[in-house]
Length: 149
Image 1: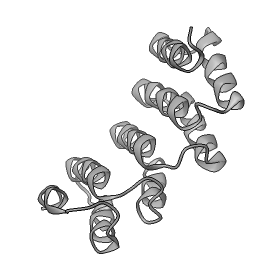
Image 2: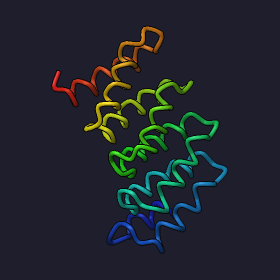
Image 3: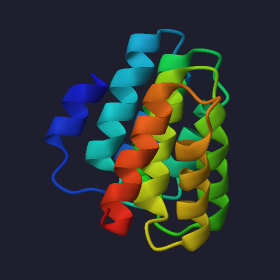
């Protein structure tokens, strides 16, 4: 139902649509939560004051797939250069789930592309010999995009 609603919405940012979609993020089924996150990308606009806080709450979920989807959604809905969100996303570069780490690196590069401190954090992950190889590769890729390497 949430997916159908998202397809029918004529414009993003309608609180009467975003609110009910966000309310489904608490569903006990992981597949429903994933569908809700995808739907939010269609109905919420960047910096949405209802969607972004709800997505931030999902970052604490025990399921790595949910954390990964939440980080991806932040990459599309969080406002760029927001220090608080950048700091939160950066902390997930060391998540126990490699996919979450890689996604956090990519999202950090997107949200803080103009921020020297963000690039330094990403550089540190690229150069961290303890980090998983996919995470280091994601960091190298992001740095290549943001620094023209």
